[in-house]
Length: 177
Length: 70
Ligand SMILES: [Zn+2]
Image 1 (cartoon, protein in one colour):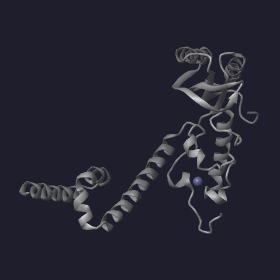
Image 2 (cartoon, rainbow over the protein chains, first blue to last red; image 1 turned 60 degrees about the vertical axis):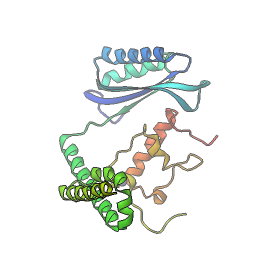
Image 3 (cartoon, rainbow over the protein chains, first blue to last red; image 1 turned 180 degrees about the vertical axis):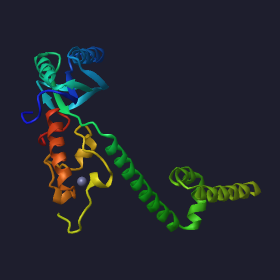
Image 4 (cartoon, chains in turn orange, yellow; image 1 turned 90 degrees about the horizontal axis):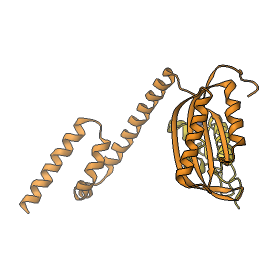
């Protein structure tokens, strides 16, 4: 924190634990209190989530269970200490952690999308190779089950057409029997 | 058992970000005694290994992961 600038806007994420002595509804109320606390200090909540009751990995002040709450918010850097202090003093919150959350720029998002498309195409290729390796008898037996999966995988229309033809053939055969 | 064959980084290959709340993923890089495994063993690249270490430590603070095995 010392190296970063002390003024300006930032994007943060807070995760907190409400002790088990409260009920779920009370825990949710406490979560809204945290929300109000952020709004009070001129923050803007962009995302919120209530995880519900979870078992803690280790006991904290003799609590074995706790309710988790999550908020993402924009805030001026100078106001962050206030929230941190308020939460630390609060008896309704067992533990909390504020983390700097990076906001992705458009260029980064675009690049990520490109990579995702590349990976997907690579995976699709691998699946196709697997498909051709399967024996024919086996294929015919299990077409009914596997077609739904194959349809989801096959992105090109040519594969779908082949499948449709095969399906029709099988259906006709069934009618004959 | 360190494998001679170079593994690929799990986060680079799957285009994932390291998130301290995603315990299921973090679990893969922790041993039975809840210690952080070296990148040389898991194949995670140095850049992601640094992110992973901080993520695991953050998860420990929030009691999402145990710091020790009982
Ligand atoms: Zn990596």
